[in-house]
Length: 473
Image 1 (tube, rainbow, N blue to C red):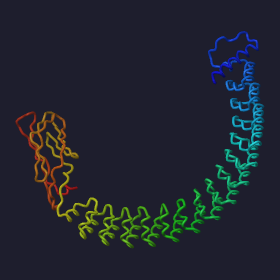
Image 2 (cartoon, rainbow, N blue to C red):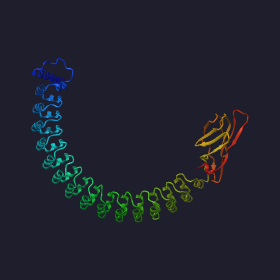
Image 3 (cartoon, one colour):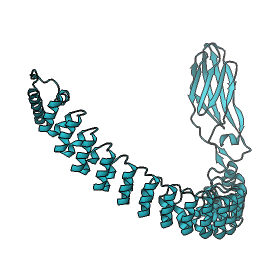
Image 4 (spheres, helix red, strand yellow):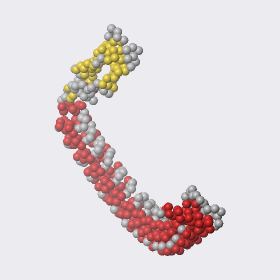
């Protein structure tokens, strides 16, 4: 179809040239028909558009005469004209007002024709004239939804006819807000940041409407809480006074307060210790207020103070189950009462383990082990034995033995180049039994080495006695 139209346009162009007495008729066509039509004479364009009105689409910036020829035959063709002349717009409007949708910046008179025919057509007008807005809104207030940033007069015209329309106005004028809220206070929901006066009108009508106000004024909060303390759940950042008003009427309302003042916490706990469950990270005083009333409540305290732990476990040792990291003293109180309670303790203290099990097994090696002489340095880092040659000569280690408790573990001989290091992985050796923290156990390395294959053997005895705690901490 497109090819046929192009051919027809070319024929029209050739005929037009012939009619106007052109000197010659083109014998070859090297560019598109659109370009040909743009380059054609005015008379050729007129001839083409008269015969085929739709070809105006192929003419950039057609003159008014050409625009008129096309639009008079088919008003919808105005959509192909970027900036149609006013008289062209008027002809299109009189023929079919819906063609306003194709006109980017319609003249005021053109806007009037369109909205007098159908007020809904204002949706197609990007920046309608104020008079056009008023005519439209007077006729049908609901069309305000199609008007971007209507001014105060236009807003009032719409709202006075239908106050619910405030929900479609992005930033309603205060006078507009007042008209709407006085008619229906529940419309406060649709006003983004109402001022104190607007808020008061709504809340005095129905305190529950404070739920719909984001920027609550303190006076409005006080009115709401005094009438219905349960509304504290919907109060944004209530201050200490407002919190106290609510919980003095009903202490359990503390659960709805996000940032509880300390005085508010204590008041609530004194009236009902169980409310500690709803207080996140209570301080020592608040914890004690609850625990002294009921030690069982430690289960609701995530990080209980040491004094709080002691009160609870002295009351009932089994409560250690609810303490994530009990202090050593607290652990002792619990296991002395019932040794089986050690199963509830995460990472029980070593002394507590000894008290319960009478023995424990070694599970580590001493940290920060280091020995050296003028030629070599031996150090343990994590699970590696690092040996450094401090000389400018080669060193051959002919014997190296790890001593762990009463056991000895020989390692392979090795060769270390001048000023170089060697690292050896040390596996954990077999555990030995520890019966008391007073005990001491051996650990270290005994080494024999030679320098540059000489016959002289050097030795280092780096075996030391360590306290039992070094093997279990």
